[in-house]
Image (cartoon, rainbow, N blue to C red; front, side, top):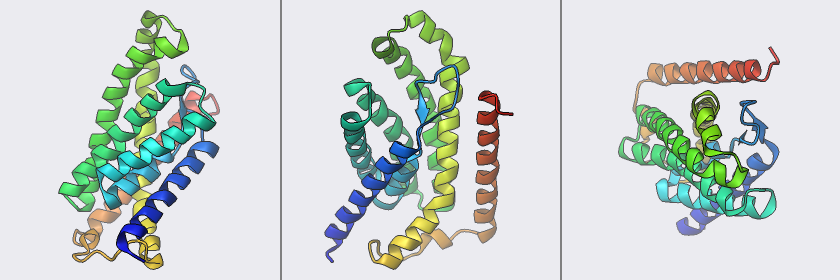
Length: 222
């Protein structure tokens, strides 16, 4: 199979998986903003960006958001814009940094940068857009920025970053075994310290566990 065809097939598969994750995994994180729901599609898009670059991450994000708008979204074009903004500031930013520094440290740096940028960007855009499609007074939205929108975006990005770290290598191995992704010539994934990789995995586990506990507390379950 031609490399371009393999890439198209793989990107189409990523789009389908991202949409499926969005469709079945939508859950509220912060009770104060129940209309904002978390889904793990950004994990799939970030992995696609790590594999094929930021442009591919943008393409996956746009296609999945378009299909979401047509099928399940109740917010129309505004929801589409917010979805693309949120996903691209996270996944495309991470992919840009990882492309420049193709190591585990580069991946972590990209994901952390994506988390920070997404949180800041979405605070601004929620302040600007939420009053339009939710009908809330802008003053009420402003009052929710720090106690509701900020924790939602931090939780969402932190969960996505931790899951991306856990899933990236297994996904890459599976794709290489299937022949859809070529073997890395320099094998940069193994160039760094094994101890450093284990440390990153442990940190990701702590972050994920902390986020899950915090969500359970916010939901009043524990």
